[in-house]
Amino acid sequence: MYEFNSNFSKFPGGYLFAVLHQKLDAYKKEHPEEKVISLGVGDVTLPLPKTVTDAMQKAVLEQTKKETFQGYGPYEGFEFLRKAIAEHDFAPYGVSIGLDEIFISDGAKSDVGSVCDLFSANNVIAVCDPTYPAYIDTNVIAGRCGTWQEEKGQWSDVVYLPCVKENEFTPELPERHADLIYLCFPNNPTGAMISKEKLQRWVDYANKEGSLILFDAAYEGFISDPALPHTIYECEGAKKCCMEFRSYSKTAGFTGVRLGYTVIPKEIENGGIRLNDLWRRRLGSKYNGAPYIVQRGAEAIYTPHGQKEVKEHIGYYKENTLLILQGLKKMGYEAFGGTDSPYIWMQTPHGMGSWEFFDYLLSHAQVVGTPGVGFGPSGAGYFRLTGFGTREQTEEALERIRKL
Ligand code: PLP
Image (cartoon, rainbow, N blue to C red):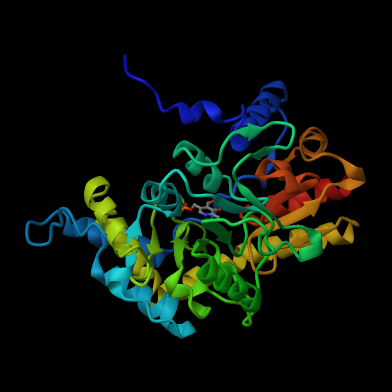
């Protein structure tokens, strides 16, 4: 008889977003007349920029002609896109990334999951607490993280890096050694950003400890403050110990069309083996490349008109975020993030639990957010709202909360 991967049975019941949707569906069934506004899940609401769809339409037409038809592309993505990435996403920050260090994929989440193939089950992972759930989940599936401790709401073998009000939601160096360190800035879910000095401390730590940093910069496009780092490679020594994930999902509305990329510098090496070579080998076995049409769409983002449109999109979401942030503060709530990210991290009022506040807001204001505790124990008593709704939804949601 075949056997399943028993690591799946280690998960506690109730994946955050599954529970959220169950509760939401149950509420809608009971109250079909109510208009629920969701500022919970981080999906975008604006359509793709026209520059992108024009480029994709052109690419579709190319696929109709024998002379321009494109079959399998390179596993690592087309050079035209990798070149645009190196020139626009890194060179302006004084960072030189080789084209053979960039790998295009169908999104950052896929790469976050795939990276688990490259490391033995013995590695200890460290994550920010609270954290984007995929970092832990994918490692549990790969046999790491130990066992779930219900009373603590933690995995036994994970190093949790508390990100709390006192440290401005940026992690301190751990007391216990960690091999694979997941950092995400701008952060999901807290909306916090990290200074270059503090990020440099992490890079120095990783180089000293022989650790690898897996830096998730999916929300890089939302950084406003010119003093903040746009890529971890702005830090000295980062090319020896850091890989970086990027996504077009939130920047350019690619949540549905799917595209992202991962940077793996050739300097990252352990025992004479290069991480870049392992990743390339993995691609050769498991991946046949992201769609040509979508890669042409992403290339168009880097044209002057594409840049203008993308900036307008981000600007729209950031205005929503600031509306929420300022609105909540005016009402007397403690709220964080939102200035360099699309997320707002609010403290629940009157010591309410995260899920208690979720239920309260849903039943009294028909507004949905994400309970902070679902992202880790330090998220208890917090609640995440996003700027990805439409302006009308955002204003209406705020008005409903104000009336409460
Ligand atoms: N990384 C973080 C921190 C995210 O919040 C998300 C999506 O919400 C992703 C990665 C996934 O991005 P993609 O849509 O490119 O898979």
